[in-house]
Image 1: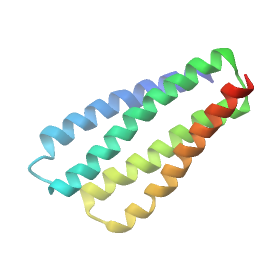
Image 2: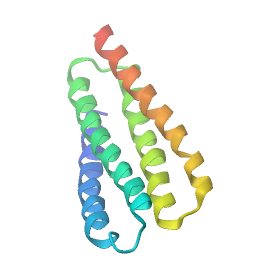
Image 3: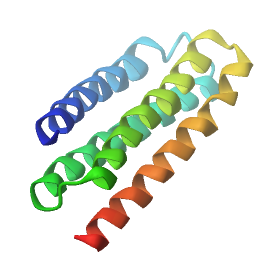
Image 4: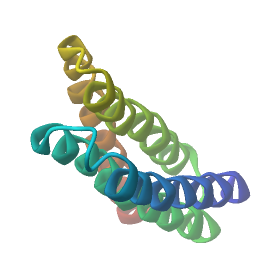
Length: 122
């Protein structure tokens, strides 16, 4: 599990840098400033949670268990839903996609709580 989380974190980090560059260079003249900001928030939270997933991978070496595993998967799913919905919203302008974002945000929050719980128990 540790290796999986570290691998996913590396992929999320790579994609975060790629999406950030794409947003800064490829979307600047194509999106409104508001939608570019939405896209950038997606990139920022993707990078935050790539780092969080690295922390989960490291913590798994010390305190393996179901709660820590849940934390990792909540970060993965939460990032996909939160950042993914922001990317889709900013690129398409389809407003209902914004309704998915809080679901991802709740998963990210739950991931942080599980990480704290796993470390506290460890």
